[in-house]
Image (cartoon, rainbow, N blue to C red; front, side, top):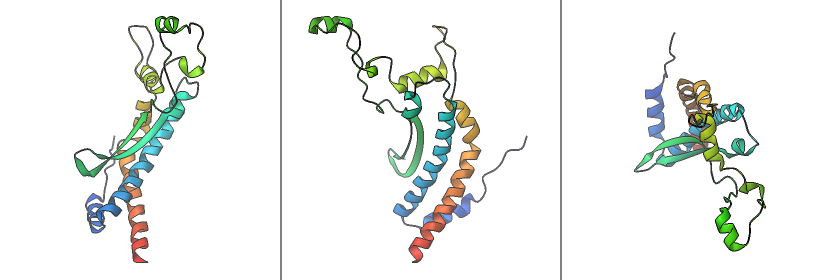
Amino acid sequence: MTRSVFTGGKDLERALLELSTKSAQKVGRFALRRAANEILKAAKAGVPVDEGRLKRALRVRVDRVRGRGDLLSALVYASGSAFDFRPRRSDRQSRVKGKLGPARYSYQIGTRPDVYGRFVEYGRHKQGIAARPFMRPAWDSQGGMVALQRIGDELWRGLSKEAARLGR
């Protein structure tokens, strides 16, 4: 089995250092987001059971690493705040307030997408729920060296666009 190797890293670093910090970060964020979006697409395609909430809750976030202002990171995750979710009060609290009865809104039934996503991905072995991973296969197909190569290609594309923009 042959491993592909990322090539052109030194040339890429030299080209990025010629740009201003703001321009280099802009190019880097764009490249990371493009690579992470491919992983996101594969993850959304692999969600096994869904009523639509988990797929809609999957997001990409590209940020600076805390404490290291010049490094960027990309994160593909299930957002818990993607919906107006309020868990239903317990029956005891509802009786005290005089509001015992069925849930009024659909978002009061079930759990948040980020919690639900963990149960789908890893399963609950004590309860006999099998794992049905969707994030790991997405990483295996679109992450690692594939993502690194895509980031390199996008960085070169962004560098050429930025050089053309600065050359005007």
